Length: 168
Image 1 (cartoon, rainbow, N blue to C red):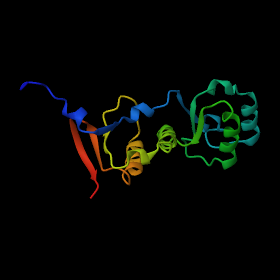
Image 2: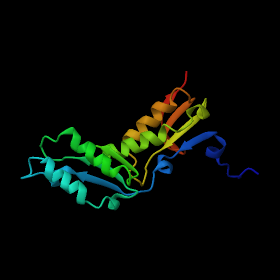
Image 3: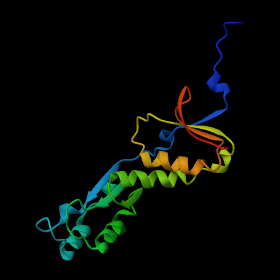
Image 4: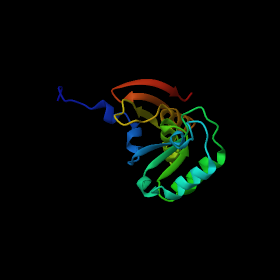
């Protein structure tokens, strides 16, 4: 059969890693302390503690929460720590930083679970063009984790890749 169509990509032995497959479901929420500041400048401990006591923390149940202050105010470290005390029992994850930092930390934890030795001497394509908000930091981290083990690493789609690394 001269005209037989052969799928060379499937025969190439390439392993495709799609970081979207690791994207955990769950709402991401930014908790901004700026909304709790007196005159937009000062965190008053008594008022803050009253807020913490009255707040319904269940609205953060099973959510990923980033805590931050987006105004130029000096926030004592203990304020963030008190927020974690309230959020940690109900939220999936609580981090200090913005939503990009949250996404990075989530991915770093997930990628740290990968058994990189399973990719020893493999030809890997790290799939690009994600529809979900996969942070660039996740692409950097997966490359860093796999490089010592992989035979080669490419980025893109199996039919059109950018070579990144090839073991000598």
